[in-house]
Every structure is written in structure tokens, then in C-alpha cells.
Amino acid sequence: MIDKLVEIDSVEIRAIGVEGAASLRRAVLYPNKQACDLIADADRDDLARHFGAFRGSNLIGVCSVTPDTIHLDDRVYHWRLRGMAVLQADRGLGVGKLLLLAGIRYVDQAPEVGLWCNGRTDALNFYRNLGFHNTGATWMGPDRVERVKLCRP
Ligand SMILES: CC(C)(COP(=O)(O)OP(=O)(O)OC[C@H]1O[C@@H](n2cnc3c(N)ncnc32)[C@H](O)[C@@H]1OP(=O)(O)O)[C@@H](O)C(=O)NCCC(=O)NCCS
Image 1 (spheres, rainbow, N blue to C red):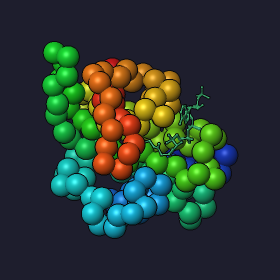
Image 2: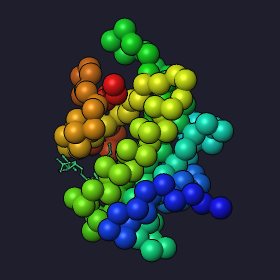
Image 3: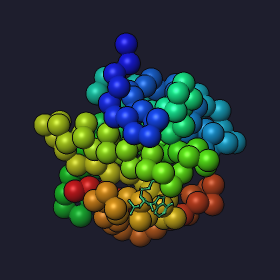
Image 4: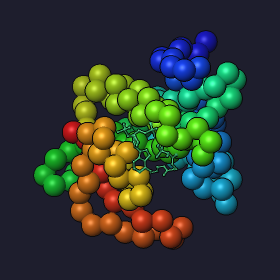
């Protein structure tokens, strides 16, 4: 059974499987790739969690948190945020914020905390609003999207 985590304005945040997360990652972030190629080994880790935003039965947004430790600026971050994505028609309504808060809440309960991601610089303020800071230089990916490492807290 799927747990209902949050509900606002006819949008519910629920725990979902990795395949659902990959389908939205593809639709929003990587339309030229196959969904199956967008699943990392860490996505299938027992501790990984995938969150979906639903309007009715329609999946409109996703994010995932997976164990993945990195050292940045003399600090250790144990969790990685992946595949933060909301369908275009549903952006700007608070859906992304609810999804990310679900991921943050889950990570903050773990014994080893600290969340990081490779964030798109054009979404920087979205992450900053939720307590992330950017660190290091930006880089341009092969998809011609500029990214930067973002960490929380
Ligand atoms: C980035 C994204 C996930 C945000 O989801 P969303 O549902 O539109 O965001 P929300 O409506 O919850 O916005 C939350 C806050 O972030 C801000 N915000 C949202 N998207 C933003 C963006 N792209 N840049 C800057 N700020 C943004 C909002 O203004 C809002 O601020 P407020 O709390 O002060 O009102 C969504 O726009 C998206 O999927 N974009 C395309 C894919 C992408 O860039 N993903 C991130 C990959 S690193």
C-alpha cells in the first residue's frame, strides 16, 4: 500500500517506486534518454526513497533521495537528491517544494545526514529557498545544462 504523506490543493505526495521516478525524470529532464537508463544503482538501495506528487492518479512531479556520500569543503554529506522534476503545467504552485520537503524530512531522520545534489543553476533559488547553499565552480554538462554542487545544511 502507498502511504499518503502530504496533501494540498488536490495534490498528494506519496512514496513511489523507482520506475515512476524514472518516467518523470525522462519526461522533464532527459527526454532523449530511455527511462531505464535513468535509474542508478543507488536508486535501488534499500534506504533510497522516491517521492511522487499526484493530482488524482496522474504523477506530476518526483524527487528521490539515495545514500551517496561525498566530502565537500571539509564536510561530509551522506545523501544525494536526484531527479527533482515537476511537469511544466504544474510548476510554480508549490509542488516542487512539497516534494523536496518530503525528501529532506526523510533524510533528516537518518543517523547520518547531509544532503547534496548536482543542481541546475537556473533552479538555484528553488534550492536556496529550502536551505541549500552552492559550493565550488559551475560546470557545463554534455547536455549543455550548467550545474553546480548544492548542499544542505
Ligand atoms: C525546479 C522545479 C523542480 C521547481 O518545482 P516547482 O513546483 O515549480 O517549484 P515551487 O512552485 O514549489 O517553488 C518553490 C519556490 O522555489 C521558487 N522556484 C521554483 N522554480 C524555480 C526556478 N527554476 N528558479 C528559481 N526559483 C524557483 C519559487 O518561486 C518558490 O519560491 P517561494 O517559496 O519564495 O514562493 C521545477 O520548476 C522543474 O521541474 N523545473 C525543470 C526541471 C529542473 O530544472 N529541475 C531541477 C534539476 S536540478
